[in-house]
Length: 124
Image (cartoon, rainbow, N blue to C red):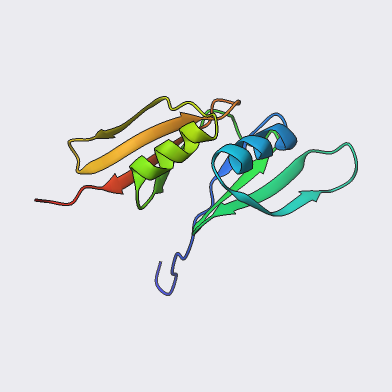
């Protein structure tokens, strides 16, 4: 696409309840709320959350299916894993070194969406 330049992608994750999921993402993973939108009372909500340079949208709309996997590059995956555990969270696995040169861990929200965090291993 001549002249087109991709600048940012924002994953949109399907959740049953924005309120419950926001508590998980903000309370456990350290995200903060940017905004929330609802067309009218009783309609599905969408919330935008960020941590550092990463932004996620959580939606109650049925245009998405729960169970996504989002990959987030981080500085200090071990520190993030410790932060999650200290906040009372449970990792699916990790942190562990991967043969593709990353150190990774994974956490799952209450809707089955997975967030995998990875840090590039430095070569010795």
